[in-house]
Each structure stands twice: as C-alpha cells, then as structure tokens.
Image (cartoon, rainbow, N blue to C red; front, top):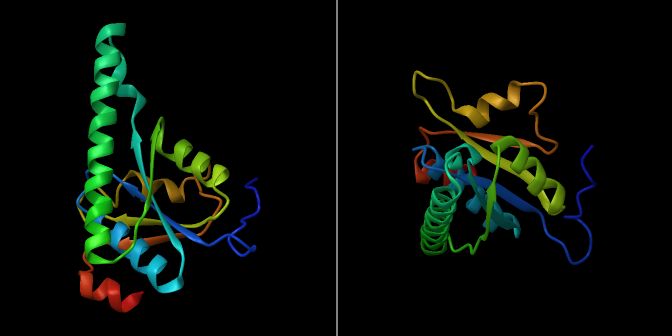
Length: 163
C-alpha cells in the first residue's frame, strides 16, 4: 500500500518522475514529464538507477566499479537536467538509486509523497517496449501511482502540443 500523496496539500506540489537511462526513448519520457511539470506548475524528478549486478567482483574492484557507476550516473543526470533547463525551462530534482529498477522506483514513490505520476517511454524496437514498460503489465511490479507511457516516435513538437 502506498502512502497518500501530498501533492495537493499546502506547501506541496505534484511531481512527475522520469527514469533516466541509456535507452533511446528515455529522452521522450523526460521531455514529456518536464513539459507536464512546467505547464501544470509541478515539479520534475529524474531518477537514475544503478543496477547492483554490476558489482559482483572482489572488494577493491567492486568499490572502484561502484564509484565509476556513481560518477557516470551523476554526469548523465547533470547533462539531462541541463538540457531540460535549456529546452523546457524546468529545473529537475535528481535522484540516484542502486538496486532493482522497479523496487527503487517504488521506494522513491514511497519516500517522496509529492511524486504523483510516473512517466515512461515505450520503445518501438522488435524486442518490445522496454523492461520498465513491460513491468507495468506484471502483477508484482505494477506501480502505485498513475503511469503515463509515451511512444518513442513522438517529436518534441508533438510532445509539447500534448502537454
């Protein structure tokens, strides 16, 4: 059970959340979430999730790999945030988590009770829409807030018109 959302309470505002990763469709989700936040007076949270399976090595190597993954996450989020500031005019919050993507998304939603809408983008590759979008259909991974799925084929202009 998810804690009640606080986004309509005094001193709070509705936040849109997008997951930042290396998929081509990620930019579509970020753009949509940023435009919705801007046009509704809301906030934007960008979440980057580091997979824990990347660090199954000897202790010294694991620490170096974890530090490198954190540096990459920080750089990726900083670049995405700057691009959204320049193109949309929204200054997003940035969040880095380590763990299984669906579990970490649930944790962020539980911890930040202003997060009210998760925005994902569906890829059009033959492999499917992507693991996060696919997880929505799974019984155990359904998210406790509304999820907006943006097609990766939308242009900036089409996203702006929808928002």
